[in-house]
Length: 223
Image (tube, rainbow, N blue to C red):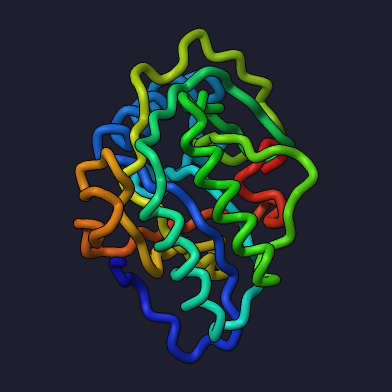
């Protein structure tokens, strides 16, 4: 388990769990966003998610007592230790009222099994409210006020292999939400290790963006 940002002084935290992506995957997804999305709708018409903040949300917990953070990280650690190698492939583009996303094919279903295991354990500990609709593997790449109704000719090439699974805190700021990694665990088959050691990155990632999405559905098809 790799520790990240400090949360001392916060009584409650807006938490979520997500899969982090390899550097090469971040490069490829962000380059696609810049080349395809921004060029199609024009600069200023949407806001791209920053490269370092692209991720695959597993579960959005919402406002959570700080004392429960250790429980969340324990759940994440235990699930990561028995996870199978994950491979995700871009298969579709989808828009909601506030975000655009690249939908991912969960090859062999390993990501879905990991997500369901984490969700079930968090729900059993009264830290997560399960959603009626199935979990959808995807990466949110942009946000907007009005859906641009894009029809990208091509999707990002290649496959994505998550490097680790992490607990994030979402902090509200005047400029929008800022995401910070609190703790992360390497996944099997990733460059970070075999899933039982710490992630190799030493710095938490942050994201400044307008807080326009429905946080209860963060990480699902209605994000």
